[in-house]
Image 1 (cartoon, rainbow, N blue to C red):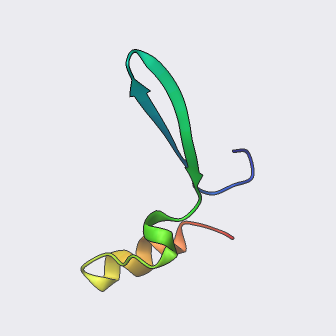
Image 2: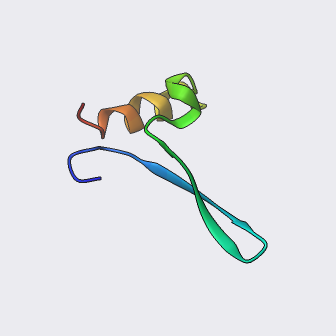
Length: 49
């Protein structure tokens, strides 16, 4: 994930087997917000895209 500001990796454990699910580059499909709005702006300012 070098050079990518945020990546969530999902894995699933099914019947003692580990399976890769997906890579997610944006929390809540990039549509989520934080409350209060000041936190949304502050956290957004920490990521350079």
